[in-house]
Length: 210
Image (cartoon, rainbow, N blue to C red):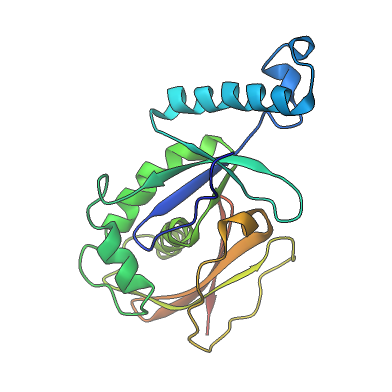
């Protein structure tokens, strides 16, 4: 396994869970391998090749399971694909209003969603794109301005929607190793309307807040 991939502020990271892990016989002839590490590696490489062919992207192998291995493969979306990503993310996570190029969020989401045929996890920036898209959907269109009021990571297996924090805190990104246990919680204001949005993998839950 390569070195664990951590995020940079200008990057969107998309982690795809290794579907071969625990299901190696679907990918390789298990009789050809004398030990489990060799078997899991060979099956993982087969799955990795599937991803490279399907998405025409490079992937790195990582782990997203704290305490117990959950192998995954990560690909990166940067400004070489969408030049506005560094600018958008810097403004958004500083809590400043975004009034220009608001429609760029939807374009980035349109690119990202092709990966959602797989079991994915997202870093903080990737989750922000889904959260903003969920707000656009709730408003039935693209607002004139958006602003993030707060961000925090929450335990993924807690049920229901957590209460709004109302403290204006913007937490740092959780370590990528912990992503299998994390859901992202955003408070976003769009055209004066406040939303609490949870991003859990590729699934979003949104409600208007006061």
